[in-house]
Image 1 (cartoon, rainbow, N blue to C red):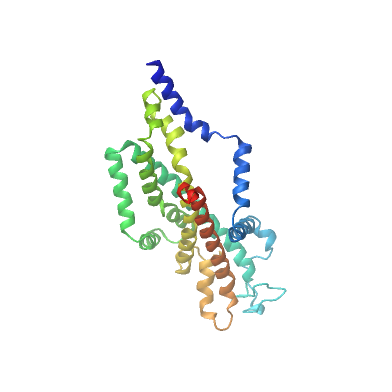
Image 2: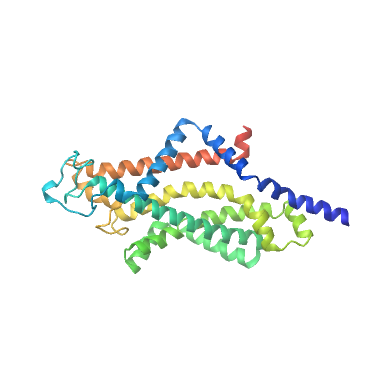
Length: 304
């Protein structure tokens, strides 16, 4: 009996030892992985880092008030005074693009993190506990996937009115079902693993098993999904703002700027060019980095 208990403790400890790597080793491994990344991925990382810096230091990078109107500069082209030109109200397009980065990145990050937390918790508990709780969670997942989220968002905005808090709430619940379904499927596999069974046999509590053995083994793919989900949330926020039910003027947002400038495409294309280029570069960079992370963290692709 003591031999079985000792073997169980060894089995339980095995994953913990591999996960409790020294910080220096983890840091060096991360740096090595980044250095070995293709040049395109490094450029994408640079674009993402630049977007974060722009969002954090927007008042320093663009000291001009993005809502300030100057009708004398109406539809003025790019110049030293207005790097990206001016819009139909004489507002600086560069400043509005910079401040719009704050809205897009902030809303997408908050929504992605909230969806990751809610979906992972519900999915993990659903896969581990099973029973009625699993049935309820999977019913909610199927219900949200059955209806186009953009329609649900339009209905909610029509009821509560367009505002940034409403937009943040909608963005936060967008995509949680993806995390829930994936974490449930992963938990169903992990809960039958030998080290989980060994931990249960020596009396380890269920919360400890979830925290020490289940979550660490399903978290890496979920982070990759969260990274790639940011792109969809940026596009969702821009789409709602383009339709006029997202971020409301005069607060600058990429979707709203594109909507305002689409009628001036023949005479002042720079009104649309700034936010459109920023959106394309950022979403493309996040998508490519997400694909690269998926390949790096996938052991089958590493063996190939």
